[in-house]
Amino acid sequence: MRKFLLGILCGVILAGIVLVVLAFAAIRTAGERQTVAAVAPGSTLMLRLEGPVGETLGDDMPIPFFESQSPISIVEIWSALRTAAKDDRIKAVALMPRGVGAGWAKLAEIRAAIEGFKKSGKPVYCWLRTPGMREYYLAAAADKIYLAEQDFLDVKGLAAELSFYKGTLGKIGVEVEIEHMGKYKDAGDAFSRDSSTPETREVIDAMLDHIYGTAVQAIAAGRKTTPEAVRALIDQGPFIGPKALKAGLVDGLVYEDQFKDELEKKLGQSELTAVGLRTYVREAASKGGKGSSVAWIVGSGAITRGHGGAFDDADGIRSEDFVGLLRQAANDEGIKAAIVRVDSPGGDAIASDEILREMKLLARKKPLVISMSDVAASGGYYIAATGDPIVAYPNTITGSIGVVYGKPNLKGLYDKIGLKKEIYQRGKNAAFDSDYGPMTPAARAALREGIAFTYDSFLERVASARKMKVAEVAPLAQGRVWMGAEGKDRKLVDELGGVDKAIEMVKTKAKIGKDEPVRLVPFPPRRNLLSRLFSKSPEAAIESRAKVWLTQHGFPTLDALTPPTGVLRLMPYRIEIR
Image (cartoon, rainbow, N blue to C red; front, side):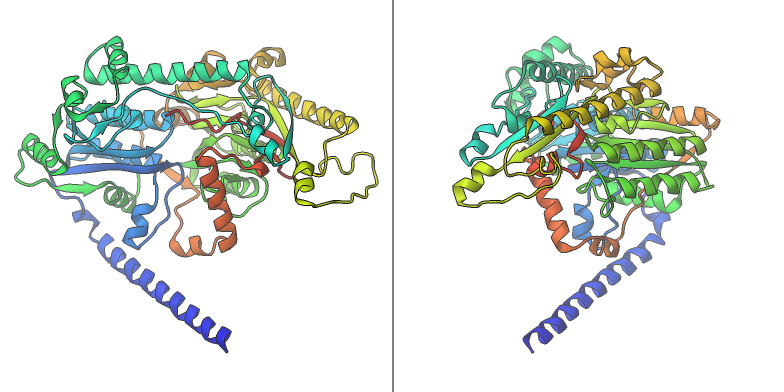
């Protein structure tokens, strides 16, 4: 009886949720019929950038709270600023970044879009809230920068931290065995070493030098000073409000309402007419774009085999789902060309190969350009090796052409807790991937042969795509990570740029007129609340979110090293330059 009543109660609650969702959806639909009046003349576009900036379109949530939590995508920010520059109703942009969750490539896209907006002659004012280097890098593109007097400008340079778990795992009897091809391919070092290799230190130092150099140059240009002066100032950071003002890093110390007063004065308005980014994006979407349709196919996250949740950044790129997107775009007669946007550190070797094959099939049907985002490394670079043009940002993390395998040996842990296993096998190497003991020499030899084969195939795919000899690619491989600018110098990348450059190149390939507009068609499309609710089981959703939290906080999960094949085209580390 209790279970029956509980079932009825759950049904009533679910029905209530559905009714609330339908009510909000109906209200918003009615409101969207008035889209012509959604943006008033003399409006200021409020560019509040908080939290993660995604690649895929956020979910369509008719409930205001949940809608505000859905990440804005980089292409929506790009599109909004590009449209606003030509929109007579938009008179200014108010940039308000806080805790922006984007890598240095996405940040460069946003900054370029801000600078593009400024070319229209309209002002960009920025108000900062406890900003770090990321936020200030964006703010430096504005005409004026403001900060609250009691706030801090946390601008003090860049730092990278590497964590090593060998000692911790050893205390509980866990050993992780790693095999890799490429002296820079250090994806398993976090588990198998207690310090970084000279090769790792070389790469991290090079990355820091490059990103720090570009950030300093951008800040110097925005603040109309020299890079040397900016470096000297950063060495004095972080800054309290008055110190930041005195150093010329901000133009005024005001609260948010006073910041809006400054904008009103600049625009000659008695009251600021504001339009939110999401409202502006929704209005533009409701009108639809003009021109030839170009597929904007997004692959974001780690690459794994199978399907189920490929449309969620948390789940990454599932091979079967992503292959389905590629086929859908290839068979859509309304699509004239395609841009594949890659933001991935790589992953499963076989899944990467399946995706690459389908990418090549797409390229036979549609003109194709690959656009790299924050990361397109290892398997993320592999799937881009179609032979079609590759566009990357100067700060894109790419390359990492190498292979790694990892296997945990938990026997020491099992002994500590009194757990015993008996293994029965037929075949000399049948139990080589068991967690109850180390690999035998024979099993390790067989494994190395397989890894070498996968690595050689990687080199051959890249050489063929880049019209190079394997001997020319080999020195660029070894698992070495390159920045986009370095990749271009080494023929791993064709052009430097972002969304605009990718569109320019695909228009040339598709013989679309230079001045002819194009309409980006997103693959995957935006999901609604119901499809999100029923896309996966609650258990799978919890597990997925838990893994994301662990990796975001610097704790790589052991199963990341042991997919069904165990062989990975995976970036060395989850690298976050702060």
